[in-house]
Length: 419
Image (cartoon, rainbow, N blue to C red; front, side):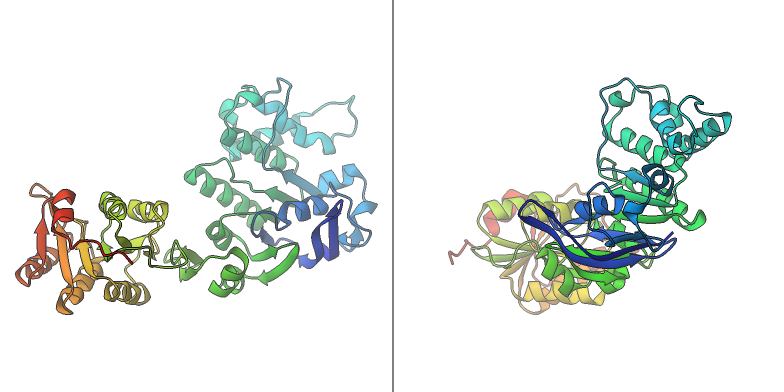
């Protein structure tokens, strides 16, 4: 089943939300609708569902205007997964999923058949909801309710799935499980999928194409690689990013380059080399003392990256489970060159991040002061066959200062300069 959107505009009163939106969704395609809050994504999806009255000939299903179909015909073609679902009645999870069979039941007096019950059972098995089939829907967690609603959509046996943030209540494991399931339905069963998504990396991983909306217009549409570019994301979201390739899926991976518009906060500049969650306390201590802090290279799943983001500290980021790239290494060296001194935490050193120690050596060789925070009882951090320990010993012999803890570090650092 194909969808065509032709010069679609829509307003709530005097507020124009969609402004001449046009694009096509091919049969069996998986397309993501993305954009900042208020860009018109959900409104567009609701017009495509015929929940909101679009002008005639602006939404076409297999070349026919959507308003020419009956509600039952639309329910057999489209299954909808909203952001959230609630009910005041004591329906069980099984009852909710069985509602997906209503468009296929010829009469309300006939009721569901054994075939309907089998479809529901399979849908609940697929979404791992059969285990709480008898529980009251309203008493389920948000994530459990979302799974039940997706099971209902599957039981509807639609030609197209329209989803509004389908992973909104799910933890990271649940997000991938649901997106894997939706992709499987898309590829194996040929179901067309249109999904409003906020997570750019989920969209890049699963979507065939992305329509990026901004202020009610389609800013860009194409493959994730074509749409998710630094310039486009800067223009639409107002954030500077680095685009890499996920080493496992080969999908593009979007990472924020800096957390603040300017790298200079105030005071003396210090660059932190850390990882494995060892840098967070040091970042906060330096930040609280008025130093302007930067850090890198850390992967985007590292606790140190989260700490930097929370403190609005610029961080050189890298894709998880990959080696420090040439680009990230160069950015790390640039930040080091702009700093007054370098602090190194006792971070685990493996093949992927060994270049961080090489960056420290380059800093010391260039005349930068280097401080190494290394508690006496710290366990071995060398996972490269002794190379890390040897390099650290060389740093100490060449003049790097060893401190046992953060307090000793702060005492030994140069006084902050007001700027």
